[in-house]
Image 1 (cartoon, rainbow, N blue to C red):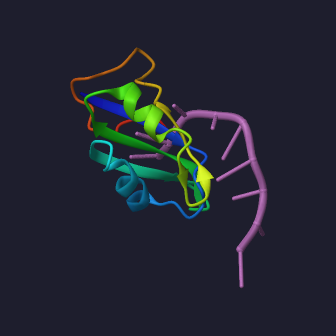
Image 2: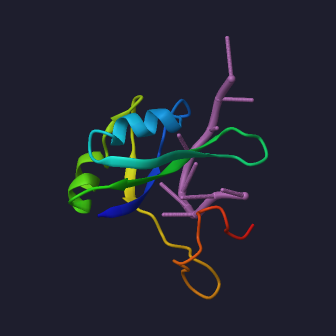
Length: 99
DNA sequence: GCTGAGCGT
């Protein structure tokens, strides 16, 4: 099943590829991206990972607290912000959120 | 060259 994960407490050196390489061992990573500051471009220290797993809680237990680049990362299910009227599942490509 | 709670253009 597919799951959207929130990954926090990341080291500044962690990037999208580091994330994907790490979660690749726990499931089929569809997209992994570290959120950088929109203004300065520097890392915000957290990111999001969409992957396909058989057991979500098992992956979270295995990844949450795991040390990556010397820092224990925090993994949880990402909140679904959807939209003002609720989630839209029909025409959402993932790049249509409000500013 | 720096920082450290938090949910993304």
